[in-house]
Length: 82
Image (tube, rainbow, N blue to C red; front, side):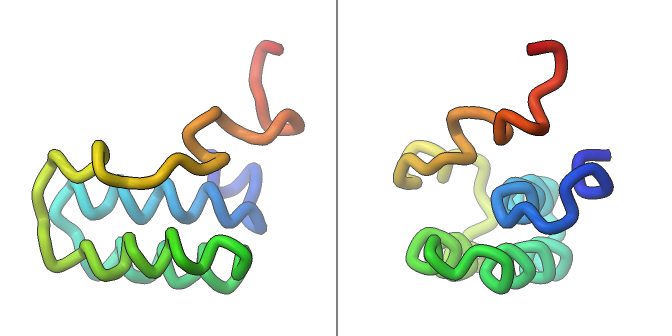
């Protein structure tokens, strides 16, 4: 899994948090988002916004999230097949 390949990448934990939210698992989402915040404090505003959205367990919140580096794909050193 990607988490094992890049355990210190905040973007990986942010994506995992969003996946857990969509799966209806806010507890795991919070753990992943908290880890993302610890690893990547420069993105605190985006991560905290995702944490606050945990109360709204809907599937259509991706459109209102600001663009971030995680939306462009994995970091170059993690890209497979490039």
